[in-house]
Length: 216
Image (cartoon, rainbow, N blue to C red):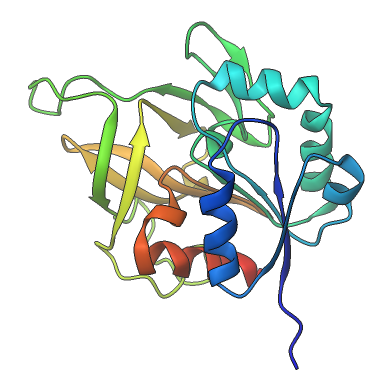
């Protein structure tokens, strides 16, 4: 019998842990939810979920000493997936409620989702609901990426007011368009990946994203 992929979901008091766990288990993974640094550092794959404010997430990680743990995971080459706030914290900094330092694993910063569309009309913030994944400018394919075998235009579920802006365009795997403004939807740099959308709430497409991560 094939051994199921093992993954640790980091519990730092900020995140939709039950939904993420159930989605990963649905994908066939053996899942452990923990805040124990030793268990996290020993994991073959790690998921960093998160909802809410950037400052709150970073404070809670730091208070538990898990910010250094997550950085060590990335340095070791362990596959790491950040979801929503978890993805945003992978970046250098965020300007949410003042400039706040992030984990610094992907060059770039987190900025506000624009309140106006490309044609100047106001749009609702936060960006909530289903939106289609599109190729960022300069990328021609999702093959050999977190979105391997996912169709262009596939819809996933978003809830966010801020968005990541990678310094290197090659770190953008997928965008979505909100008011025709490109928003980073999925990112990747070496063994570090992130989804601004919630794969655990995105049906079969989201499950496929998680399966792709588990196959890393």
